[in-house]
Image (cartoon, rainbow, N blue to C red; front, side):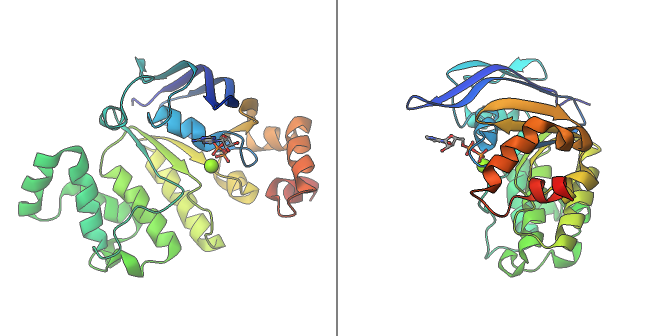
Length: 257
Ligand code: ADP
Ligand code: MG
């Protein structure tokens, strides 16, 4: 399986503000990696750099050995990297199936046209199954629940056949049962993709994460299993310090229980 991501010595600077500092990170092919850290830690920025949206001041990002820094976004998509955004990108008036079909055709426009003549492609029907949205295939995306919409977005990535998926807070705003369903979905997807997920919810992490990377103020704070990360005094300090300002910090509630 391909999909290895290697970040080395990464620095990202916005108008003199250092959003990422000397970051090293390796994600192995087929890994389901979780990335956590307080607001402003640089998590989304890291995804922006990997996908070519933001250019780093220095450092290297290799994907299957190929340097990504300096490549345009669409070239990086073509190398097999897909991402979701914190805001939704589905077309509400189109059906679930049409959204998937459209996403599938983004990567290979001609193949998309040919496919449409033949009906539902294998990729699209597989994505409907994987995401559990088959029964909703002919419903407009606008009627989906928040959770279903997130699953559709993940489906829209899968049909583009990336080897690395970068998911920015996919379970934010979901109910507990939607979170569980999403965790199962991510496990399923990670069977044949490398997946990096930004998420904060410790209960979710404990159930579905193996390796967790913690960012803080643009630096790698620590990395390990959920238990190791939770027991790390530096992580507790970062989240505890924050907890005095933000009363709803999941890590702290979990760490003290
Ligand atoms: P996270 O996703 O971990 O909450 P971000 O990566 O979005 O954090 O942001 C990290 C820091 O970089 C924040 O302080 C944010 O304000 C800043 N930042 C992010 N993107 C930009 C940008 N395009 N211009 C200026 N500052 C930015
Ligand atoms: Mg973010």
